[in-house]
Length: 195
Image (cartoon, rainbow, N blue to C red; front, side):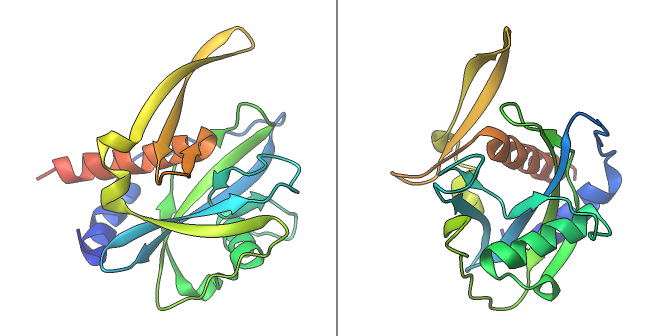
């Protein structure tokens, strides 16, 4: 699929669907950017957290972090964090819309995912403190059922599904990031099913 075709489908799908917003005072507000890049076809960008961060050490995530009082919106939080973590300029991102809020299970966060297309060439530079490296995975690879699996895990006496995407031999996207990614891919699948 070409980037502009993807953009048109997502634009329509995100604007037409009701979004689930979680407003819980017991959770810390955070936002992430789900960046779509173009390398001869759409790719999704992930960041690998360093071992020195307080939460989710060594895990793959989307650029993002905790909402600060100076942020006017969740979109602003996601764009600010993307600049701080990987030097993605806010003016290089075309924001398409928001996915459903996602609560983390092991930490007290509620994450608002912001979907955006990275326009123009950008040289991503991980900050080295929070972010160790950046990977971009083709949308075709992420949609390959062979790299996806779900396990049932128990937390606080409740079973819940945990998704895993084996994006390369050494790299696995899982947890809240995989839940956000699955939501994104499901929306895309639903949009493609509509004639």
